[in-house]
Structure formats: structure tokens, C-alpha cells
Amino acid sequence: MGELSYTSASDGWGAGEYKDGERVEKHHIWTDAEDRRLIELRKCGLSQESTAERLTEEFGLRFTRNAVKNREARIDKNEHERTGGNLFPDYLYELDEDVVSWPELLKSRQKIYDHFKGQKVYIDSYSDLHSPLIDFRAIEQILKDNEEVHKFYRNVGYKIVAVINGDLYDFPQLSKFEKGSQRINLEKEVTVADELLKVLSSKYDDVVVILGNHCVRLFKWVQKAAERVPEILEYFEKRLDPLIAAKEKYKNLHYHKHNKIQIGKTIFTHPFGYNQPILRTVENEMIKILSHRDRYPNPDVQAVIMGHTHQLGHFWLNDVLIAEQGHLTLRPNYNMENEPKRDWKRGYMVVVMDEQGNVNQKQSRTVPV
Image 1 (cartoon, rainbow, N blue to C red):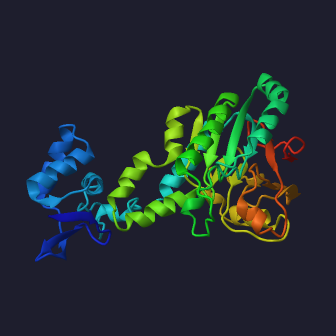
Image 2: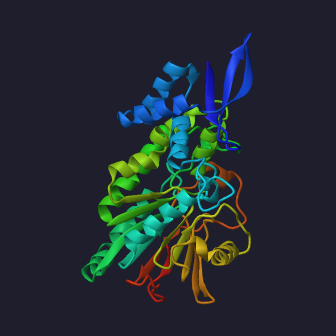
């Protein structure tokens, strides 16, 4: 039985069949009969996955859920229709979101921005927690120290928000670097992180989580595995991302599957690069962000708050507050065995903004712990 997989170079699908024990590649074009049957099954209420199974039974080729999903999108676009004297089919004038994923990224970024638009916000930004090595003592002390502060700001109409600015997880066992003799159980890592999310979701009005370079190790591992077994990506979308499960559990948790978001006129970012000079990394990050303002819901950027470097400090540069916000993790083995050139600085970031998203210059600051 052949297996269908999307071929972006045309309107067809790559199909494989086996002959004399060897796989033979050929090109399969969806037939009118297959199209009609797909439409009938979907109108009957079958899911894309169930539709794929029925098509497989009826036509003798293996149809995957993605094959049905993408073909359905093509049918919806009337892929051979030309209007207004167009030389090419109408759908070719639109961005194909089967080929690039950034439109979905911008939609997610816009959704989070819109959620806070027009509201006064007080934000505690935490980063580089690296579960299961989260410094829970430090975080508990921060929450206790800020009880009265949060109460004051709530009473004057502010939303109290926690941002996890990257690297909630560590995923060392999925790293390309040496793992050492100690092995960290993946389930334990997710469970420990969930304990933090449970408390934060009870203490804050909203919790926003973005990815860091350590978090994406899981995605890279799955994508590599999917080179051999493409169906694993479909399963991963539903089951393996711990933050999707957390979002379902904690209704005030907002998950952005990328390393940059905007709230008001502040960008929170967790870049993957690093520069040795003090605060040079965030300065370079600010330059890149300001050079691509059109990628953000509000091009008026007044602050760039950055995780990743485990360094702590902030200053104003050309009327933009830039900060590296420290870390809240216990020391891993590699930090003790291979001492970094500059020691890590424990801390977090406070950002206060009015209804227009303007950053309060006096109240917004890095806080050492």
C-alpha cells in the first residue's frame, strides 16, 4: 500500500508503492472521485483522521490526516479557478500556509497583545528556570515580598501578570551536549514545572509563557524523529507538548510557541545567541527588533526585556528600556564543572505600563534576588 504525503511543488501528492519488496516512488494526483468522496465523508461529520482511514480502505492508498487536511484546503480555495484575467490559479496569489508557518506565529502574537490591550498591567517577568532545577525558595520569597505591592496595584485597576520569558524547561537529555552521569527523568522535569505553573496561575491574573533555547530541544528532537516516522508530528501536536496540557489545565495561562511576544509597548524575548560584553546581547536584540517593527502588533516599542544570558541589568538607550533579567535556577553540574567567564546573576524583571502600553520609567526595573 502506498503512503500519501504532501508535495508542495504541485497540486499532487507523493505516493509510494512496494514492488518486489522495494519501495517505488511515483506521483499521485488526487482524482475527482477521491475529491468527491473526501467532501462526502467530511459533510457526514467524520474527522480528518477518520476520513483518511475510510479513503485508505476504499481507494487502496494510504491517506494520512495531513493529506486530507491539505487537500481539503486546496478544494476550499478552488485551486484551478482564475478570475479577473489572472494568468495563474487564484490560490497562487495567496501565501501558502502549508509551506510557511510565520502567519500563525503573528496571529498568536497578536492574540496575546489584544488580550492586554487597553489595560494597565504590572508584570513580573521570570526567566531561565530550567526545571527541575527551579529555585522555588527564591520564587516563594518574591511572591511573599510582593503581596502588598500586587494588592496595591490591583486596587488601582492594574492586571497583575507573570511572564515566563523562556526556558521554563531544560530538557538536558535531549541536548547535543554531554549529558554527564546524572540522568534527569523527563516526566519529573514536566511535573516540577507544572507545580510552578499551578502556583503562578493562582497568584496572578494571567500567566504568559514563551519558549527559550532549552525548551525547543524537545521540538527539535521530535522533528528529527519525524524524518523517519512523519506521523509522530501529528501525535506530538496533541500529546507531547507539556504547555498545551498546562494551557488546558490553567485557564489564565497563555502559551506562545515562539521566543518573542509583545504586551503593550514592551517586547519580551529569549534569543538563542549570546555576546560576551555586559548587556551587549540585549542591545543587539533591541537593534534587530526595532529593525523589524512591522512584525509586532504595535511598532512603538519602548522596552525590550530579555532572558537567556543569566545576567542582570538594565539601562535606557535612545528612549528604549533594555534589560537582561537574570535567572531563577539552581546551579547545574556543568556550571560548577566549567565555570563561566561571568558568574550568573539571580533576579527578575518588573515592568509597569498604563492603558496605552507606555512603560513607567520609575517603576520598571530589574530586581536582584
